[in-house]
Length: 88
Length: 310
Image (cartoon, rainbow over all chains, first blue to last red; front, top):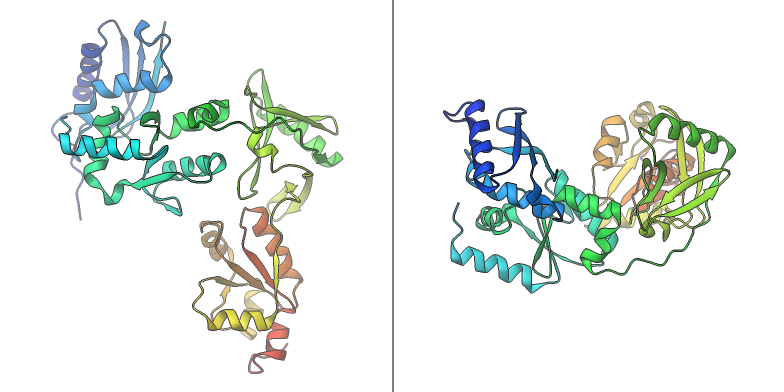
């Protein structure tokens, strides 16, 4: 039977990694990340860059920024339960 | 994460080969995940056919898609090569009416269906609207799926919605549902779980009747179907037709989870209970439901005398 290993990174480190990666891609963003269950996160990003974009484009921008954290079967980010993108 | 060139070009070939391509878990007949199932159900209402690819049997594509679209989850919908979105976005676009344009489908014309809401149901609907309306602009909605499954809900009005009034109650009906809603009657009936709305749709396929000879013939073929005995456990102990399952609560739950086009044959002692259950299953969205005329009595009379009569 497979045992699910969340890896060495604690939830707070992952939260910081998510924040950092999003800020790197969208420097002027206001980012809030909260944890759900193990590997599950909720993200809210506010940035003028989202203005005029369709919802799918906004979310692609964020997902693209954290793709490396979601890659592979033992990824620190297993799922984003909620992703909210707003323009101020 | 990098996406190798071979996988990338395979994905672009796939999404550009057909007008509409859905990457999903499983196939439309048996989706392997609730999100994929929901998108299939939505697309079925818009398109007679579209192309799907099961990522569970294509792990390279599944992994590659994440980078290809900057989207971490399945399902993913593409139209003319362009990524449209995943489950939440498709659902939202369907509710708002945007999906017509995105799929290149002309919305059906605004034809207002005639609905009949009984006095009892009208009072119930008004009460339900008050209880569920969380904010301003919330209205009652009637939807009818492609398998004629009706649903009442509360939501806000979208651009292409049609407002239908009956007995002082106004319901929102989307353009696709409206095509299947002409002549619907909404009533309140007593069910084992208390009073509930009953939506009677004359456009829904009607139940078929099966003679005991038809049933015998059907049992002798390889055709797959569910033979369900709707009598009581005590009657089931007394006499039974070989191969039939007693439709108890657990069995009913199993049946409800089956694809809606599963062939179902019902029987009881003489016929009426089977006919009632057929109505219930049709109302739940099943489209291939049959009742055995004369029930098990006719079976022992005409087919198998070894089945005790009682």
